[in-house]
Image (cartoon, rainbow, N blue to C red; front, side):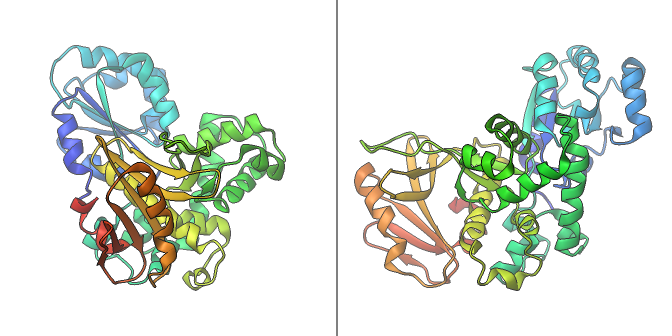
Length: 388
């Protein structure tokens, strides 16, 4: 058991709210975390068919005897339970009585918004972060191995070969979880769509082009993107809203939360394949951007991260906002510093008037340039979270 970075924030929320919902993808460690932190509460998993049947058919009976609180896993499986939970929660002013987990954010929020709004706090738990992998002594030495393995706990703490685990994860997700949200009849088309998306990680999302290539209509593409977002397979990075008198692109960029999952969908079964793979730069960028998102999620911070691109092709991979401060970040998978690392940053800094910028790359040389641009190894940056 390693200490998850989100543990501190989870405890804080439980001390201030009557209930806390821990959401995130399957197998990200939600159950392990809540059982560790709230071991004093009785535990129920609604993945268990008998428990789920009891909670569905007799919610009042299921909840009787646990007025003092409980941990209820995969609670979105029984939406009828929420109205009964509301009654229990309202009976007492005690904090942290009910800890709920869910791997489908859409179904969970749909139920919560109808019954528990104002009574419950949210925390997203994503797969392992870089510091968590290091804490467990699971951090590979080279970037290709890390990209290939990804960050899901079972690949590391159970030493399951990444290609085997990822293939089964995708199959389970498509065959079971997708059907909970929407009755998609042609699962083969959905899985093909998922593979098409993997080839576009780190790129602008073009709904029309995806629809043509997948053989579905644009509305279906939008619906399926929503499903994948709400089940924590992908996330969208929005374009930055300040144009500085420039005409900007308006489409979001799409990223996978986990590079191991993207590699499996791309047919990358060995880390060595990544060395000369045409998508290596995009997958490396995916890893770095998702690490920023994980860091903020673990602290319960709003993911105020964006990208910026104008119609002439100038682009900033990542803009991080904190209060009124903006930090532009260029992400490079290369190990050698070149002039190309700085071109877009300097252009944007001149437009915006921002004085500092950051380059995260795969090399080991640290530089602090006179124009305010820092060049850092991406690992060293994330292994010291106070830098982020």
